[in-house]
Picture 1: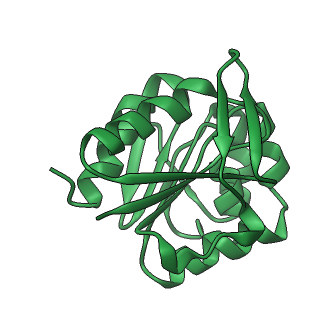
Picture 2: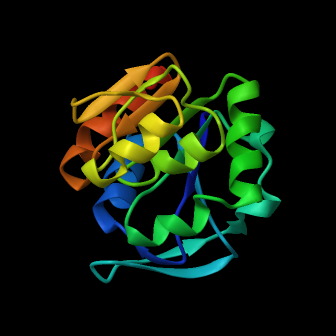
Picture 3: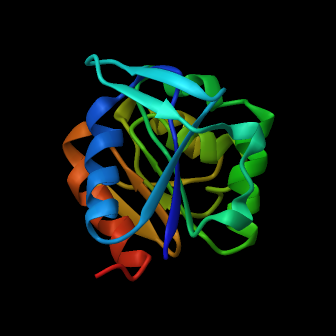
Length: 170
């Protein structure tokens, strides 16, 4: 079975950027685990609650086929978080699908994983991504190798579908 880790902020994650891809991946047969800065209840910008089963610091990339960073204003907590960077780098080293939406591609950029990679994000992140070597894309969803990025809530459906396709899910 395909196992996916979704990383959300403890507060102000973007509800649909979490729920829509999660539903798509689960509907296509994946098992989804949620992580945050700590295990426990997390709250979305629009009022959704989600249970993080573990802390990012306790996640092992080897246990997953994909690692996804969800956006929303709270995702800034991971921009310079050593545990989030270590997880993302370990996922890249293992050739896992690595994905981020909205402002969360900055996590990948700060981890040094977007240098020379075509990527998109919420427009406020353009300068941050390009300063870290990303090749800015205006597409709502960008796939470059095993890296999937998307620019915000309106792209959540396409983001989830792209991840599912890369994972080979039916």
